[in-house]
Length: 176
Image: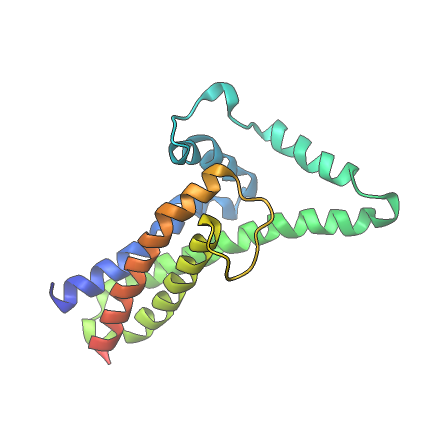
């Protein structure tokens, strides 16, 4: 495998999150499309419109969460729900920034891509750890609400991100 191919593939693999989540920058509740039409494949299964979440379902879930808060903690509960959706949007923004970096990097000579490979290699390594944690390995924190499909996402994407980590590491070390 040539250094150029290693570099290109290492960069291109980092486009995966934006391909799925970029739209959430303007509509954080559109994450339901991932829930409805992508996660069922990790079941394994097929998407079924009869059990798909709707916008109304999502807002009812958020309203129920707010309604479960003690009256004295209502503002904190509202701020928490706001923060979850705000961070959903910020995550989408970060994935869009990664996309810009990938496309910019592909225009550069391989020897000039080392900074991108460092950043994307670290990102891919951390994504590997988070996905491995979701798959059941007990490190890098604790997610208190991992679904069966979420666990299976971790099983699939931990190796995906491990490959992206290795390719970005190899591209980084060959470019420096």
